[in-house]
Image 1 (cartoon, helix red, strand yellow):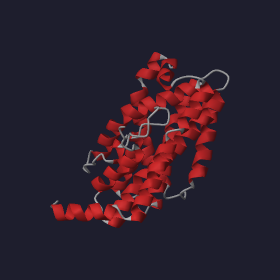
Image 2: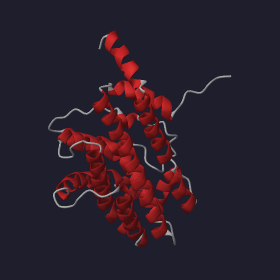
Image 3: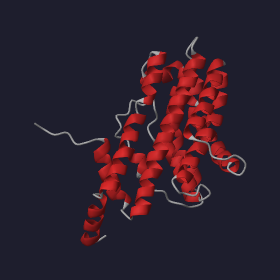
Image 4: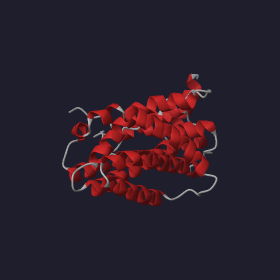
Length: 260
């Protein structure tokens, strides 16, 4: 891109309406990171210690379990669009919260069985948000972008709000794109799901912790989807390059510290 075009995009990015929308999305991103802390307060532990609660065979199988859940979700979420209308964010949260309670009630076996179901509902919710932002969930690129939302840090990560790399990862669309994306997402999401499983197996309060965890997870990933597709919608509608928007967005999420 030549310097004239760069200057043009810099001028456009300072448009007050666009800046206001970026600030709104940055605020959503920051607020989403506090959701998981309520769960940690409930179960009384640190996020980094949660995985130690799980039996070794479960920890070792998390990657394959998560990969299978993502593959199932990718197929099932798309098929469900032909029969079930998109739901509001709050209704998706109610559904997964109830599933989390049921999963936690039976301990580890039911919590493990719940993973693919929750993953499917979450992916379907993300697809609904993409449609709400004017993107077509039947489009292969958009479907893969929906998967990409799962590369966000997760609500139990103690992330400081600066993890926005998932917003800029470039997608190469080819025959192996879906499997390649799932292969990249699975290890990170497996850690997130392992933390979720651990909270659901807390003695006595497993059902409550399961409900709280699913509430946090659903709220978090829906917020990340709103941010992700909100930024893409601004780029689409304004003509400003994504890189320019992301530079401004990062500064809003994590403002530079002023040295005194």
